[in-house]
Each structure stands twice: as structure tokens, then as C-alpha cells.
Length: 121
Image (cartoon, rainbow, N blue to C red; front, side, top):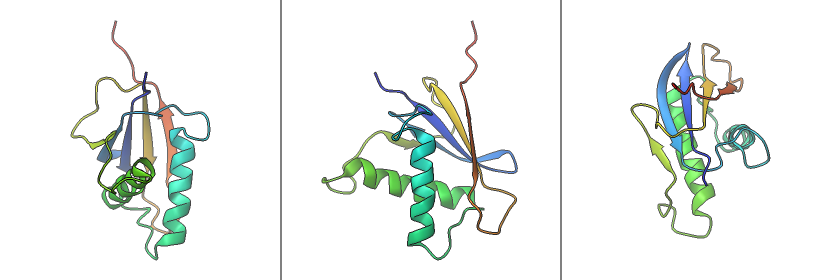
């Protein structure tokens, strides 16, 4: 079974972009979300002149492109599923991650935190 998650790209606590990831949404391991975000941040730093670490919408767009490339592997770049841009959280997410992008505009990496969503009984 897939471990689904929601990744909120925020600025000063406000969600400005919400990415749904269908699998590998757990926090532990080399293919978990925090490890993937660390690799993504490193690639942003090495491949771009403007990281946009302080801009959640641009950073989320870069994450979708980066993650799609990871998922597509040897396939055509658009031949992937498992990611979505959502207006609200998917109800089946096992974890919610926050990528806090602000207010620092000095190029430092965003802070990543996570939690399990509350389930009403």
C-alpha cells in the first residue's frame, strides 16, 4: 500500500502551494520525503542561480518538475503519475509536511517539519 502525503509550501505559516504525493510519503529512510526534499534543495542550489527558497509557489513548481523527473526515470518526462497540485489536502494522506519558505530571503534552505494528520473518531 502506498504511503500518501501532503506537502505544504508555506510563507510565514500560510500555505501557498499544496503538493500531493501518492507514494513514499513516510518520514524515514533514503526515499522518504525529508531525504527527497534535502536532495531537491541540493539540486536547486547546484542547478540554479536563483533558488527561490523564499518563494513557496515557485519552489513548489520546481519540486513538481524535479519529482516528476525522479518518477519518470527512463520514460518520457510527462509519463508520470503520483503527484498533484491540490487546493486542499487529500483525505488519505498519512503525513503532512511543511516546507516553511519565509521570511528569510537570504538563500538559506527552507525548514521542513512533519506531522500525522489528526483523525477524528
